[in-house]
Length: 273
Ligand SMILES: [Zn+2]
Image 1: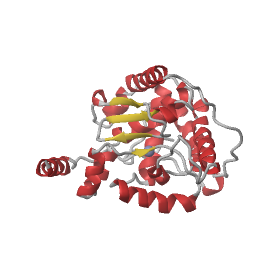
Image 2 (image 1 turned 30 degrees about the vertical axis):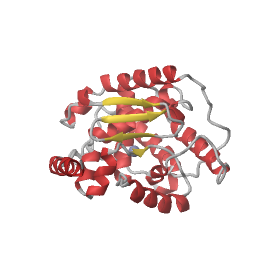
Image 3 (image 1 turned 60 degrees about the vertical axis):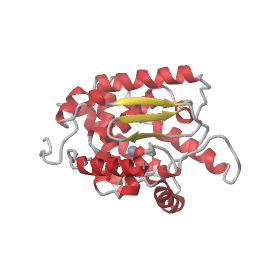
Image 4 (image 1 turned 120 degrees about the horizontal axis):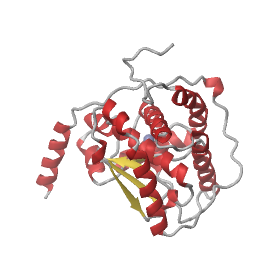
């Protein structure tokens, strides 16, 4: 059994040579990043698993069916991507292996369709840019085993930088997972926005996603040490703060809405005038 696992790992390591395209992410000035003032609570929709699962599939299919040209540009077959709904209360979503996106009930239940689509589009963005593959490329056997076990990196939500670094690193080590870099997160956000826009979702409404994640995170902190049935996975800690994403959203929205091609720019392309 162990031998077979190791064989699988080496095969994966060998096949992980492909690197994805590199995207030009619009700059966000530090002074434009304002602390997010988190007020109110994210709604809880109390949907059944069947309802959540349907909504997740619907949003995923909408995003994916509009993604063709972005996938072609990245020379990747997005038809192989699939979505999985997990009825666990964990507040998380992640991109695992090179084709799968998973969303948990704990997160889906707090979001409307547009926000669910925003999360899924972000995770699809990781796959389009082949972030899992380039991450695995520099990963150790242990890290790759973590990914085989289906442990991925989510989208949400801790915002306290003091907590994020240590916990994130520790959780990453324990889970055997290599986090995506900040640059990879920014690329996934950018690609996700193009996908959302192409699928007809309103980018202004979708911006609320970061506030929702910040609200959920604030609830979690309020219960620190307490016991609750809503768990936020620690590897999420490696993501850019919600405040950074909020600020970046506006800058990137301008680019997406004004884009003549409807495609994210590659690093090799000159800036349009
Ligand atoms: Zn991500």
